[in-house]
Image (cartoon, rainbow, N blue to C red):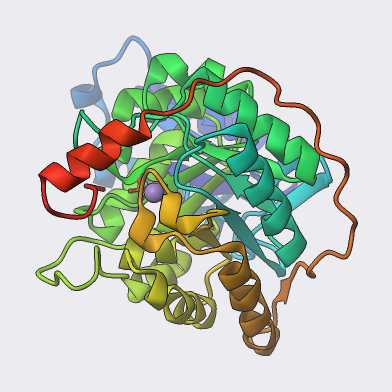
Length: 387
Ligand code: PEP
Ligand code: MN
């Protein structure tokens, strides 16, 4: 439970409240990331949760202390909208300066599903930046349905991604799948992605909550809205309020699209919690022809940004080929969104006229991914490569 305290409450009144709570077996810790004074109640260390006072007893204590303005409880109490009615601005440090997600600007993340080679990520990064993307994405640790599919370049992929981001002036976003990889990935990423398959990987969420880099939390394909928000709470409860939600489609009976974009979840999440919400139209539809329409829907629904898969040569994408769009398609998408974004009272970073710097040499010798094997595998299944 959270207690919202009145501003400028004298210390003596706070001490009296603390004393009453402690007598009832509760300890109160201030939550550092709210401007208003908020206390989080927990059973005192020497007390079992079952010995905590009942709701009626607690209410009686709160009634005796007028310095308590409001009390909140629930599975996503720290994320709940009333605590920050104007919303959270998540700050991402990028080579071009600090970027806010959740402000007036609709922030667009673009880049390939997987980092495949230096040339691929460098050229995609330059094209994405030129069209107005603010962050570069690219997976180095890939959650693949088949263990025989390309699993990502790992540490080398992180190095290539970070170097491409620096070259194009973009911050970078990449997925971390395991708690033990958090410090490695956080050494390269400006925004750490939790993929749909890991939304309820609680040890991973706990570790990410204990570090200070911002986190992009994708919704699980089979997760309800409240399960998704409760997963975000794992991060806030451990001290990290720099959390961006991402709706990426849910699994339904529909098969024409890869997933079903749950557009109402964008509005619902923004109503319930104070965290910014992005939409990933690429995984939501799985079809490059539908990405523009899904992006327009996201803007209209009030999303704070988009995460789009862009590949310098989409037909050569090792993973998620059917949903990869080319730099030209991405530039056209961004231009088509501009009037809509403006009509919704938001802004979009302008297309850049900055001349591309001469490309730096590859930062490390990355092994060529085994394209032949991946293609053979796909052919053997007589179907598109598995997601
Ligand atoms: C991805 O971003 O490439 C990805 C695997 O997304 P998701 O976790 O939403 O499936
Ligand atoms: Mn992908």
